[in-house]
Image 1 (tube, rainbow, N blue to C red):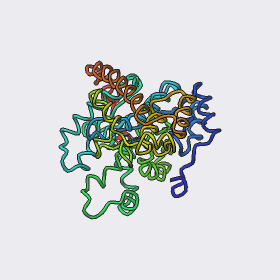
Image 2 (cartoon, helix red, strand yellow):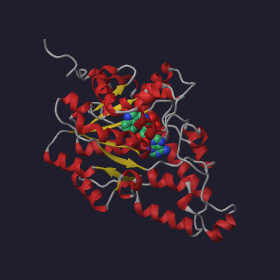
Image 3 (tube, rainbow, N blue to C red):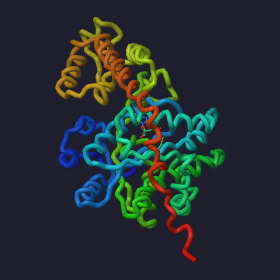
Image 4 (cartoon, helix red, strand yellow):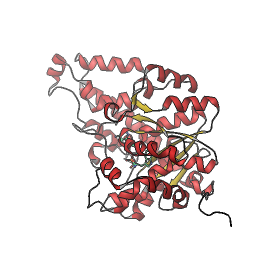
Length: 365
Ligand code: TYM
């Protein structure tokens, strides 16, 4: 990404600057779980100069939320708390309906609301978190989308997203909506608003187009900070809803979550004897990555685990059992908070707090 598309690796100085402004250190920054960006420096500069700034991220609600999805949201909460920022959160039930043959729009819409419970369980503040549900809130986006759509050609769409002649035209239009949401704060606040998007690197293609067209539409270019993708619990690939047995969902019964960990692929040797003799490979281990990216806050303990694994002092069974009990505890607590939020979903909805933008749609008579 860095070489081909010009995203920048996050440098030590940039991490320090963000932590200085936040007044706090963050493991996802220190460990470069968030590892690259576009114009984070510009965004922080504008923030410090007192310009209006906000956050934007989102979810394609095709099912339950897994631990990979919540990773950028946990970091987003940290930014929201530390920098006092408002967050715009897009639930793209339309995208997932167009994307998945078997999914009905009523189902993806229902998941949009289910997934809001995960935002609440993470602790995102409803007074500062505004969720837009595409299929119901299009009036917020359409005044922007008409202008955005006019700037994007089919050939750009094909080159960026790999669309073909047999792609349904819902999917072909969809990027317009994800891009338009990055301009929504400027419309809602009726002033130039700088937007930072914390999200997985897989979402970057949208922002390349958004940044290309922003200035010509009179909006600041949205900035991004990209996270690496949490691996699934199998031998390869990211944690993904397309491989449910290798993903841990926030709705998994805690015991099921723990069992998934116990069955996970590791970087260990085939036998305990070999492990003790040759050591394991934490760099290629889905269990170690779970510690590194989510479940071990203490840097010293993480490093200790790394070397104990490498030198064969730690065997996979013990390492997994420790993680399984952390995951079990995490799921118990998370699910309590999730259920407690069920009556508060409305508080998160953008439509209960803002009026759709109407600018430029009709000239005064
Ligand atoms: P979706 O639902 O695929 O993913 C939601 C967020 O989770 C990130 N993500 C992961 N992060 C770490 N490890 C993983 N294994 C992993 N899998 C997914 C994604 O990068 C994303 O940040 N089109 C979007 C919905 C969307 C959106 C946005 C996302 C609309 N506007 C703005 C981010 C920012 C989607 O389907 O996300």
